Image (cartoon, rainbow, N blue to C red):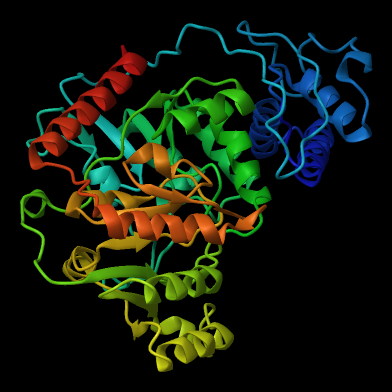
Length: 478
């Protein structure tokens, strides 16, 4: 079984023991509620159903001993401090030592019971009300039937208190707050988490899960990212997944490879659904702009943590220079040139400007594109190169597929399983395979691949995605 990082596990144990002692001394209702939440967190994290047995397993893991050898006299008795008892769907299981980041997937967790949990609601099922985190993202919007015939109503994203309606800044989703669940649980039937929990640690996510359980609300989790592209350290995201994946009542992911990794790491089965279209339907049928030449593009955006831009650009510049009527375009956001911005990288910009001054590439530093500008940019490329060293799936790849722009994607993650694309060797562990990148560019130049979604195929795919979501929700609520 994959335990949480030792530091996270120790915090959970300390919190549980502190609350247990405090509850024994005071008996306060608020302390009891926090203790129950901590007990649930411990059970979810260890994969052990009884709080006392989970505590033993966590202690054994921290001490480097087998939970089987830990004292077992309390493993199946009721918790005298919380009143919790062992649940009927499982018994304590031995805990294995935690795996470090970058190692092979750990031994599989014991399988969950075959029967899916069901949650009853007093509301009719003509419409399933979903608290979706988020709701306004294009991926989530396009998981719905465009005509509304799927009978799924996704609640609007609540705006944080005090945030002006004109604010464009990203804020942690309000729905992730257990207090929001407590206050609004009668307004939704299913809670569906996609992403946006970067600022939530394992304790906060476990508290969210506990709040959903208190109110009998099922949790669906779509695993978009098994490695967070915005975080250089994989530890925090894995710690979050150690809570969410075991706790979810149903799991969805986008590729068979991601589903296999989830099965290997957490012994959970996922429904695999493709990413829906990204651009609006009318653009799916719009002819590509006609022009001469061959344009390769790298959009460095605001230098996400998973990007290694300069090594990729240097290889591309050298490769493109050897191709007739070919050019390299590099785009980057103004933030990279702003000393006050987190993304500021004067060294990278200086190197890119040197290459531009030599005529090896054209460099454009600009504000964020709106949708129309982005589609125009992507449609003007023959090949978009993703300079990623880690990640899982890509909405950018889907947009290129919508518009008929070929993509060269790294062999890390599961990009190649999403849509047809060229691939090259690039990962955080192994670095850049320059020769494979050069070969991918030359292949695109020679064959001009025309991998593009048709409007009819995307419409049919979206209908299937929407119907499957409704089936998953109904299966939990029947």
